[in-house]
Image 1: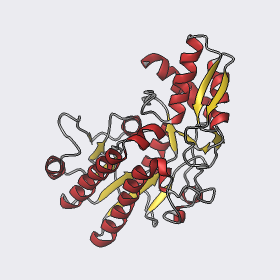
Image 2: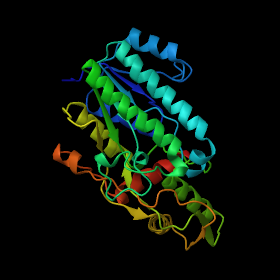
Image 3: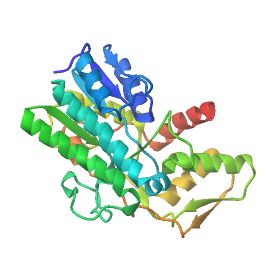
Image 4: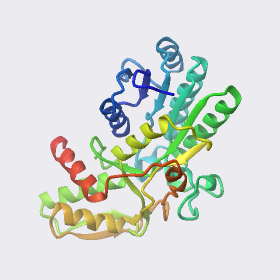
Length: 309
């Protein structure tokens, strides 16, 4: 069992997900937390990662570090999404094994499921069909991470767990329109349009693609909840179990942010996966529930956006 004095290393502590996990661990009374800036520890550098883990020997490693982005970034830089994500997770998973670290949590993504996956997507639907082309590089890296954790755990009697979240949003999100995910991109586009008194916004695709969205602090709570749970399965879906269309999210945000914007769709651009909704039955069986509805989550997120953008 991990206790409040357990030494925990958070890789990716400055990203939206990593910073939320760090904050929640502190709130929950975990005092022995370690992390390192990119300047001190480049996670792509195998020797440095191995050395760092051997020297600091945490009891638990949390892999919240990854190269992430929306459809544009995923489609444009496939080689980077493959190389960087594989390299980061290989260094941390194998490095943890070499340093005799028993506990590790690897964070994946709902992108791991096939393009035309049955809905809601169950854990055993992994590799049951072809991946979505716009994010297949990222998905392949994450799938490799799941199988690494599963097989290292079996071969070396380790406790390397994996959690798969849907799209996430919250404080500390990325609002760069070139690299952001759909929800933060919508917030930015609608805010700019309102400021400039524009009559419409242009969105990629048809607006019909469905997405599940989760407040990042709920995911951080889930991670802390499952840190101390014995899990039989190689990985668990962590989500809300609800999905809405991109058009629905856009209209939700237009109402919240204000203005009377019309939405135009650029149908020459891809939708990405047609539908993405996680089956969260297993996580619920372990007693976990998400807490934050979209109204509340948006309120917190928009305050943070206005303060920092």
